[in-house]
Length: 212
Image (cartoon, rainbow, N blue to C red; front, side):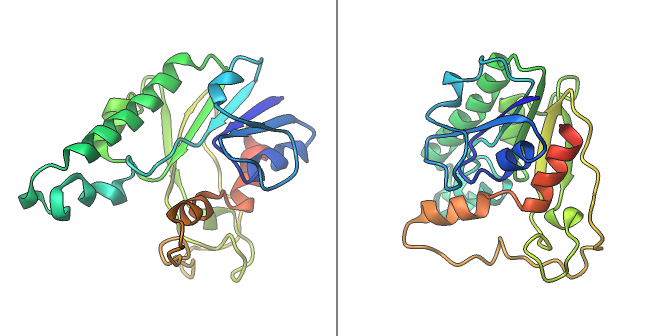
């Protein structure tokens, strides 16, 4: 298969497909940190290059449910609407809607954390006639209790033409660590955001195995 992984700088999913013999390329505005096929720039530049599967990671900053408090001044509904934040959320959600409209790849997956209901509606991802949906956890794909995959991080997948992911790990999740939520602040917030957005290796391998 020819696989495009949009919004991935780490190369984790890309490399999981490559290791299984697929023709895969990542695309991001940042350079890849893992040597391999990578397009630095807008994924729309390469979206029509004959892919069989496209996996996208839109920026979640303004759409995630965990950011709901920022929709209000002083992070309190009594403070009134934070109009700038609402606009940014709407713009981000429209970007996802635009992606869905313009992407003609046969098989598509869009990843994000648990999303604000407003963003789900504006993006069109709430349309179950078009998109299948599931929530997975990294520990679903973990085998080592002390390994890097045994963590909690609700990850949502909206898909077209793809089966739902099945767990491949051996763990129950009872001792899964909240590493993502407890990650320390960094001098540059973008560094922390990118570290938190990296796909765990076990999940990436399951994606390549089951969707490839």
